[in-house]
Length: 191
Image (cartoon, rainbow, N blue to C red; front, side, top):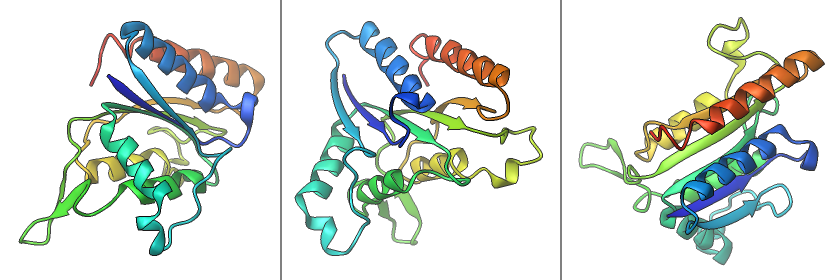
């Protein structure tokens, strides 16, 4: 199995999403010790924002090749200002390529070409933005990523979410523990 591991948090060792992606990788590689892991830290080594010439640049082609080669993709996606980090958006711009990860049919409808992949996203949020939250309408990270991956044919993205991290110390600890408990069940129950 080939696993593509993407981290995007700018907070380094203090990052909850990085801790969760590391835990996910430990679970996946324990289940498949022969797994090949491709790692990209988009905070430490960001891609530039997309330009037309960038589609043909070596970095863009490598990002697309790594994504296409991966059977499982693990992404750390902290929610910054209601959405994903701009570093992650720049990466997504490299993998959403007509004719490569999706195509348009004769009727103009988009058809995803990446349906065989497993995508696991670790989301970290300072506030409460879950389904039952009064702030749900402000949440554009989890929902955006679900839409992006569905567009390219991956309809069942698995989310590991730690939220309320800035509400209180107790809530932070409980959210991190609950997210790590969710990680433990991922290998046993793949999508």
